[in-house]
Length: 147
Image (cartoon, rainbow, N blue to C red):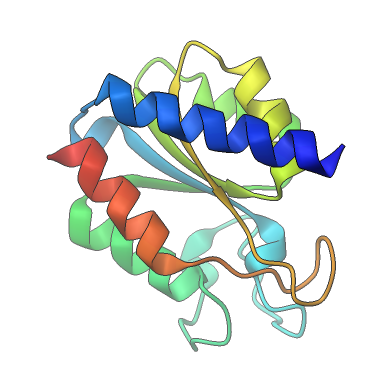
């Protein structure tokens, strides 16, 4: 099934490149899973991203900096329903979604009407723990939506 998940993500991203969807910063959302937070961190960023001390032990610091630099929305997803609710908000026209391929596939199917660029996370410690992301992919996706 993981093979299919990867293909769905790949095809979605290819189709999005052909659509050349553009939106303003206020209508773009970076959505990422809570498992990007370092598991040793004591900060409660699930409830408030401002709790992040930006220590650099995980990529939340970098994602927050992208949000500030480009003026885009950012949200941490604690689960699929929360993620879908945020993605489907009327004011969101474009999404950069970071997650494992399975979650991305599920979200893409549920939110087909939205322009979503899917960025698979890296899982050096397995699923749902201390995941990572290629920041270059996130930055490139932001710039494609905004230019």
